[in-house]
Length: 298
Image (cartoon, rainbow, N blue to C red):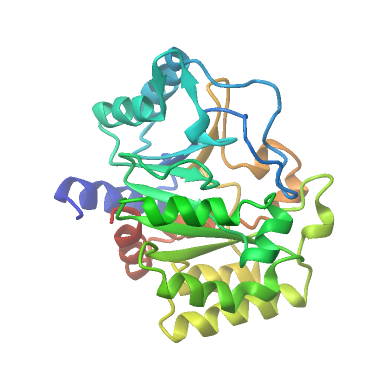
């Protein structure tokens, strides 16, 4: 349920960005570890050798982010549920972040750890139906289903990264999410062609065809969390980036988006659905902002 404070802050952020172009970050992805128990074919983040970030450094990072204006935190990895620092685990980070005043704390997970957390939303990576998901994510589908079945969390949303291997599962995966009692919906990303993974990038005209399929399913009231406005931006690729309202960070550095940390040419092929959604704030698009708020603050 949205609070008056959250609604007010969200609207002020959008208005300030639209009118004065003096943007403050609102969303932040915080990488708490680069360790992951999987070796997914598309991933370039895991096992970059910095390991679990010490809790004291994460605390300082979160304090600075709150001072900067960030109010929504995505805890990322690697696999965030694997994070530990002596007696502290992921729940320690979530508890501390909430004590600072962040509005919402989300966890992005591969689903192979038990889905038990006080985070407000679990973003669960499922990249296709069983066969295609397993080709990308190391035969993890059955483990995810077991953890999903045993979870009591009320806000689990699938996030799927579409690529040249799994896009044929799009419609079937939406149907799977629609009927699963533990899932609220699905958000689509498109693979970003980081070095060594270019073969997974969906080129035009296939990319537009896939987006049209998503739009068609959304018009049929499928539980797709991408807004229609953002899907159109996805298709035309006409949206401003890098995005100052949406940041990515380790405890050592902050950047405007994942892509901006590497090659700006990759930024032009950005496929992060949440980032495109966040770009709608800068347009001060009230209907889209309302839909985003319902999703982000549910």
